Picture 1 (cartoon, rainbow over the protein chains, first blue to last red):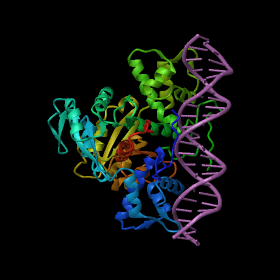
Picture 2: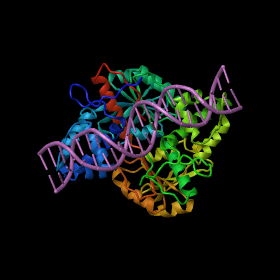
Picture 3: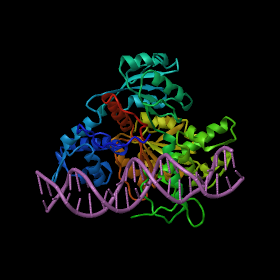
Picture 4: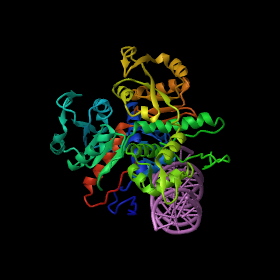
Length: 232
Length: 232
DNA sequence: CCTTGTGAAGTTGTTCACAGCG
DNA sequence: CGCTGTGAACAACTTCACAAGG
């Protein structure tokens, strides 16, 4: 079970990048895109780190897992680094996702502008409600749940998004898995169990607010105490 | 700067609960609510841990930061533990939040059913677009941005949600802070800078999918390798 | 010089394993 | 006996501080 971490494989390719680093690479990518848009060609770790909201040393260590893409005494070439991170993140291709559940949240996700520039494409929408099936949302016709397998196979979708009520989440997860999905983003307020080999990430809107409320409570009750940044 | 951790203050009250634990307490709360609804009166750490999707030892350690609320040889009283966690999380009161930006995502958040049962109440909606100001969404009239200060003060709101495009995020954050908000949940794809004492949490939809895409890419490229749960 | 890349130290989080207690 | 609560070992992550090198 103690799967040891290999920072680098024998073939020299950077592998086994720490989870915490993987979670930050898209942030760096976004910061680099912002710099590129402003016409900046090169930047030092300090500038990029500030844009990304992290410590410069952390940024450099993160980048070191990918390779040595900087120039000592100078910094990083914006376009080159942008490409290297994008490649590492698999953004040289587009990733098709299927959203299950087109209520308020599912509809908002379908319309979300930010996906397309990050290599994410909403390729299909699915809902259990016959009233919603057949309607068009953000230019996509909503399919019935029993078409999930067909849609996933046909469009080679490997990522599924659960945007249903909590009660339906586990069943939807099971259906996604049996349709061949191996990565799930779960917005439903429920823990879903999946077989080995399937990745699940969870975004829970209530929990984020509850965490803020906890810190808020402590701020007002203990008036004399230093406050530090809330862990992300 | 080296703010040392005090698990417990002199007064005996549990304090300085680790961030990782605070982030999981709402999950335990949800699991306990589910058990209570099923009429379960008592449970062992193993059952609760399974419901919550964590290791039993981790659950017990998390609970130990709050106090000793279990009974050895038996387990935990569902209702009692539920109350203790809720109290620690500040859920004995309701927390009013203001959502800035009522586009697709902001509207979906306003309509989100899951908040009310978790002590979160959407108390006000604000938007910069004159077209949206004055309209009613989920029973709340949208206020103009220049009313933010008044709304926050009047309703004693301490938590703000940014659901605007990325370009507007920093400005909105500044406005929230000057209106007296000290906790921000940021859905915009941008890093916002805030003064000391203000907490910011970030939820980035694209980044979550990009992280899944990264793992997905690695699954398909290296066909012979064990896959482990993606870090939340 | 100046900034990267990185060992080493420090901090936080997780898991084990068992003493303690109902 | 069984399950909690927790010290101690372990693992992951962050930060420091400085050698390396353009």
